[in-house]
Length: 261
Image (cartoon, rainbow, N blue to C red; front, side, top):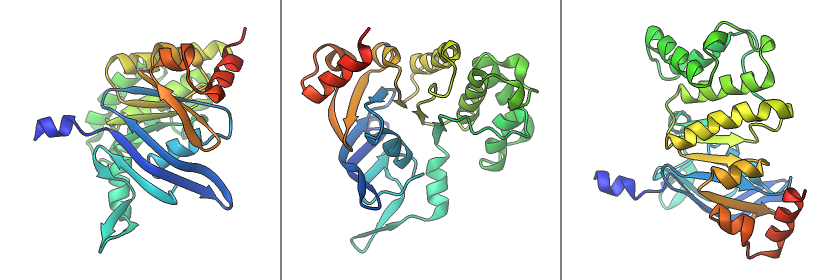
């Protein structure tokens, strides 16, 4: 049984479709992420990158296709040959296994860094507070913020807030981490400290999908790079293919523009 489990992709989408009104944001997207893989998703603004990421933990409901997380159908179940929306309890259970780090840190302003990290494991997973507090201290140390446990978000830099957000996501012991432009809201000098934590997670084998404009990170850290444009995946492959030997003209123009100078 364990051998079979290893062969199941952590993420698999089939012909994913998402619309906002008449605007098709995802148009037949097939996407796959293997266990322990770091996948960077790049492309111009408005190409569907963030929407795809939000669909991967059912923050956005899809209009067509299917999403499987670790072999389980996300958000829907089959009944009499038809797909119906899954129960809130099942969706919440699956979502609890997927860490999501947002552009804007989304920390609770009235809670300290420590309190932000312990909130979900206690409230959602019902874990004992003492055990979670110890875990939270370890995670804050992991992201380089051991001394900031009792600081409130307004006392932290943007980079520090984002690292707290990463610690908060890790506190749920996720099987998959999703990063949505985790450094785009940061001052340039703070980007490196967040990317450093993400690199460490990659080295430790965390399965990650990273929507990013940081091409150096995509080239150096990702195992696989996906280029999206116009609601579709245009090209995907190892970083050296996408950055040095891309096959599609649309990809070539984008890479040329973002790496110029």
